Image (cartoon, rainbow, N blue to C red):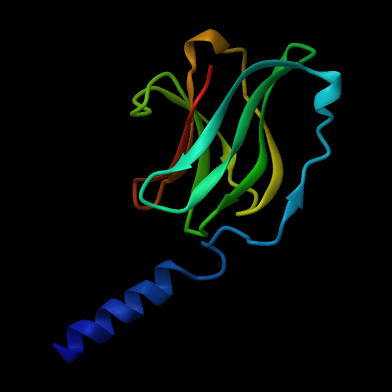
Length: 138
């Protein structure tokens, strides 16, 4: 039993090193929402983890930008922001690594997807395939 505990502790220390954990220092995106058109918005809620905030998608001269403001969540390894077509994120776009567990942050959506088909934003832990939070966009 003691050996199993030590093995689990060692594994946790290896997988949750500082390089793998999302930064906690607040960020403040410089994206100017007053110069863009708001298309969709929703409220992010935690799913099995602490996560909250407002999510907006903007059209900025033909590019789509997701803005989390305000945003707050638990830290975790390998957290990503996904834009998806359904609640289960069976079809999604990875828009980037979560910049921080707090603060205003923005993510440019790659390509030119039909944004009308994408109705959810997820904060997702890729390493352990766990959803931290989700917002339905309307």
